[in-house]
Amino acid sequence: MKEDIVRVAKAIDFAARAHAPQRRKGEAEEPYVNHLAEVALLVAEATQGADANLVIAAYLHDTIEDQEVKHETLTAEFGRDVADLVREVTDDKALPKAERKRLQIEHARSASLRAKHLKLADKISNLNSILASPPADWSAERKREYFEWAAKVVAGCRNVNPWLEARFDAAYARRADLG
Ligand code: ZN
Image (cartoon, rainbow, N blue to C red; front, side, top):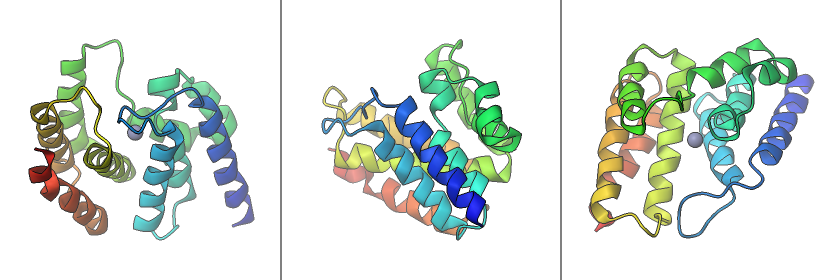
C-alpha cells in the first residue's frame, strides 16, 4: 500500500538519524544503519513483504536500546504496534550484561511470532558481521561464545520461519572459520 511505502521510508530516515554517530563493532566500522538495513531486508524477504510494521520495527529495533529513543516517541511517529514490537526486542540496560544475555534466551521462547522473526534476523546479521568483520579485540573464543549464545536464543525462535532458520544455520555452520 502507498501509505506503507511512506511509513517504511520514514522509518529508514528516523533510524539513520537516530544511529548517525554509531558504528558496528567490527574492524570495518560499518555505519550502524547497515545492520538495520540487513535485518529489515531479512524480515521483509522472510515474510514476502506481507507485514509493513515488522519491516518498520526492524529498522527501529535498536533505537530504544542503543539511542534511548522513548517508546512514546515511537508510538507517536509509527503507532503502538511498531513501538510495542521494538520494546519486545529491547534489553533492559539497567541489568548487568550477563543477566541480559540470560534473559534473551529465556524470553525468546515466549516472544510473539513477529518478535521471533526480528530476533532471528538480528542474530543472522550479527553472526554474518562477526564472520566478515569481527571486532579487533575479540579472541576466537569470544567469537565462538557469541555464536553459542546466539544459537541458544534462536533455539527459542524455531518453527516460525524455515527460511530465516536456514539462514541462521548456514551462518552458524561457519563457526569453524572463526579460528
Ligand atoms: Zn540489532
